[in-house]
Image (cartoon, rainbow, N blue to C red; front, side):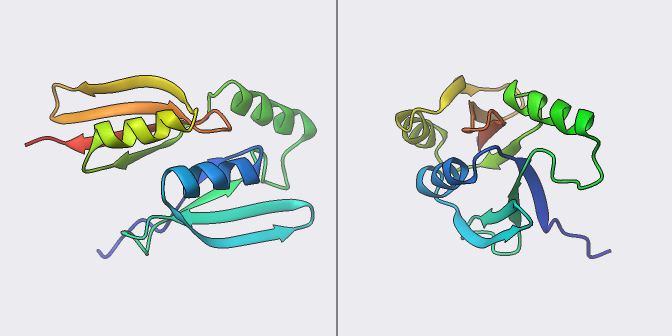
Length: 137
């Protein structure tokens, strides 16, 4: 089977802040930026993985959501309860310093884990948890 990941989705409430964080702080590149009927989807990705993209989308992008579901999604995003993304890096400590300097909310400082990685965690501007892992040994 030739199955590969192409896109994953992260809900954001402010595309401009999200783009500044994901591109200026993390070094991802914008691959696409689409505006349609009052909504916006921006695709970003690592230059090291040209076939994998992250779609930054509104928290309630599904047009079939009820108003109550739309409100619930926006509230969950505001609380940081929607899932984020895990990244790998070759230098967790350097990445931590760079992201911390940007003012992002620190969830975990670099820590050696018993399962063979050193990792740290932050929240993006929308409140999504992002983990950054450096494989050890």
